[in-house]
Length: 71
Image (cartoon, rainbow, N blue to C red; front, top):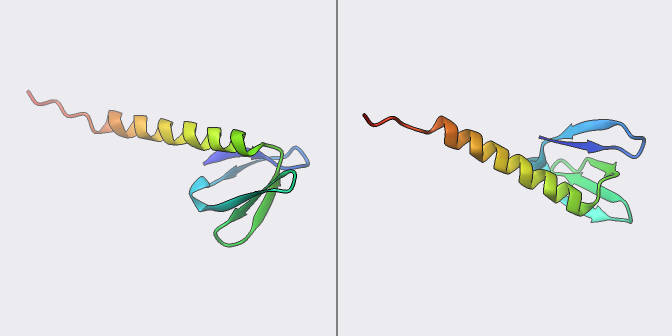
């Protein structure tokens, strides 16, 4: 999940795998798979960067867990 900021400066978590699309109107409108939406302060580039960093973090954890000692 990634942390985003609503227009009123309230922070909240979003499951990025449930994002259907993002509109730029000129703020960012995140539309979820269930068609709920959020207006956020972050730009599209910032949102993509947060998703990329989160996915990289999760993959690193997976790699650490899957290490096998073959002695």
